[in-house]
Length: 84
Image 1 (cartoon, rainbow, N blue to C red):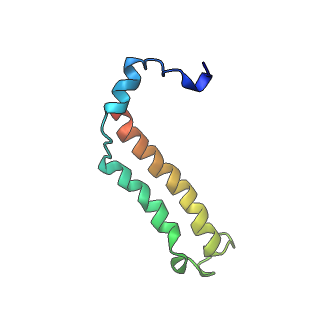
Image 2 (image 1 turned 180 degrees about the vertical axis):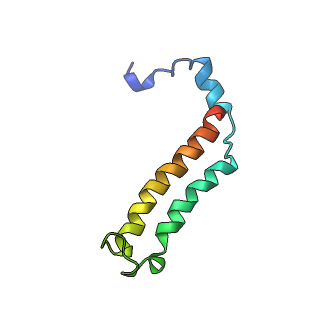
Image 3 (image 1 turned 90 degrees about the vertical axis):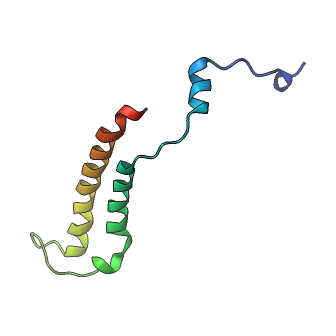
């Protein structure tokens, strides 16, 4: 008998329960779209001014979204971690 001919072993109860669970997407997850949209449209930030510490707007805007994305991700994580 070949290895691939064997019947699969019985899965443990937590695995079966996880497979039966429905996907629940809370509204908090929609906050994750904010950083995406903020960086998705380059015409919003495709300019030099205003500068910040002599760094053009194009660069510091994107760097600000890194910190903003971390903050949004942290908020969504804290608000949804009890749903697992």
